[in-house]
Image (cartoon, rainbow, N blue to C red; front, side, top):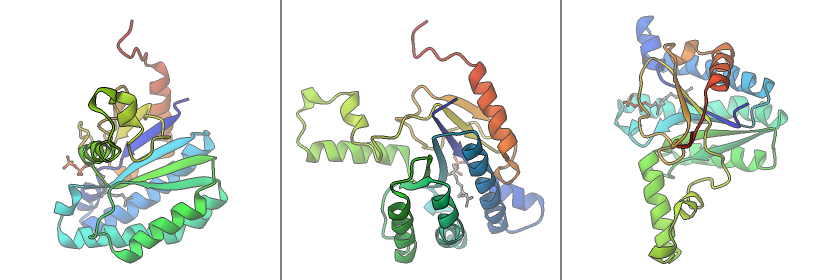
Length: 227
Ligand code: FPP
């Protein structure tokens, strides 16, 4: 079993466009898919599951969609937080705090994090206002602030200054919707991850697709540069 699976939930907008619906309907359908997949992940005993929910570049999307996604984050927590808590899920957010995140939304994120802090069945990390390059910049800033001498900086130093030093690197990354790129997701952490690309738009992604990806992962041989 992979210890950590991460998903780039891509294709909500195109799923909606295909049906003549506004993009926001795609995000609503994407939320349903997300929680089905989270249930699937819990059922197979996955310990770490991360989804890319909003990137540092997604502020460039139309203002209406950005506003929707910000508020949607709060709605999503209001709807799912207690159930996730009951099931032993620790909820975390990885990303930059930002004044553009409405205060109410930030509060809901902080409350969900605090409420579920001691859960250990699975850690669900939402990468929100997350950018891989921004995370590396933030790590470098923290190292400079800690006055670490240049000669003592190594990979472990960087790793221990990332947003969640205790998070294992993803073993498997799945991007939906047929796009074959990382789009600034976990650039440091994905150095040796297995990558998979599903042609399905995210709202059509299911636990069965997750299981298929895990089975494919189990067939792969990871060498980490060795033989
Ligand atoms: C990266 O592609 C994809 C993401 C950062 C995920 C975006 C997903 C959402 C906004 C939907 C959130 C999901 C739910 C369930 C509400 P990109 O589009 O940022 O980058 P690209 O331009 O390189 O494709």
